[in-house]
Length: 125
Image (tube, rainbow, N blue to C red; front, side, top):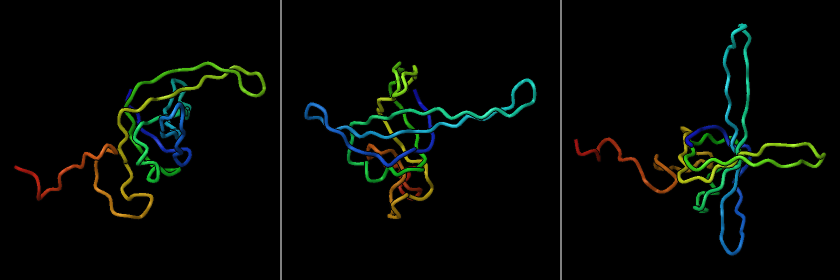
């Protein structure tokens, strides 16, 4: 699955069985006009897990990111006993989409895996 949206919280790092994993939430907004001419708005929330924890300080609430990974749906009961659906993405790739980094420091464009996009003067053609 590939999707993009805004982070609902700062990324955190959790450790399970000695393995560290980055965790955050992503809000994906959808808006459209239905057949009756009414505007329909919906936000879908995903819990994101990512194995590269070094980018956690750069993933701040409100940041816009693109995520690619395996999507899963989990059914559970909330505190009030109501059935809920939780959606998770085990990310293979996270890419920053903000024009300006949220931490105010210069950053190479590209994915969070460290693959920088060559600048114009570095392009071979």
